[in-house]
Amino acid sequence: MEKELIDDFERLLIDRIDYFQNFINFGEDSIRYDFFASLINIFNLKPHEILLEQAIPPTQFVNKEKASNQGRGRHEYKPEVDLIVFPTQYLKTGIVCEFAFFRKTEKSENQDKTGKHGKLLNEIYRLSLMKNHLDYKNFNHFLICITDNEMMNYGKEGTRGSTPIGIRDNYTLNDEFLNQLKQTARTKIDDKFYNMTKNLSITPTAKRVYNKEFKEPSNWAIWIWEVDFK
Image (cartoon, rainbow, N blue to C red):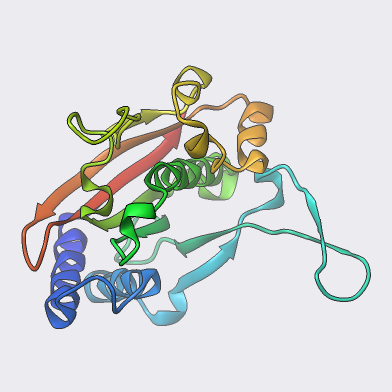
């Protein structure tokens, strides 16, 4: 990811966190909008060139029908990705992004941290399948995570209880790795993505390309992985 883009995104995040002095008064959508603003600032994009909540091509997941909550009949569940930007004059390589935002709450002791790790892994599956699609194979695919103390120490030695598989710089999501996960993490990986990687004979991978921790107003971090497959 371009250094100028990361620097601008970091600046906007710091401004937001300094303004609220906590992570409670804003949500994941605000994190996304800061990144959208940085894309506009750095690459001179027009708002209509940034696509939000875009459907994943149906060839990239195993379709499963869900019963409709309203009326009769059934409808198909269509998963999405958070952001797509096609190449422009200033942005030479297109971008596909997923975002995650983890934070402590008043009930933080009861939060499912292992499940949150599973959510990250599910996003890697989602992005790797987008990367596999012909229309997006030459795009950069990024998983962008902002977290406070909620997940910064997850899986590190010395944490209470049995040590789970922690947050990693590099992931290769083969069955050997998945079999090491706690079940609460494994169940967050959606079968419609897992099964499609099996059908396509691909293994999702992710490499952390940015990892920066901050101390003010409390401990927090920006994590960015570039996602691919092999």
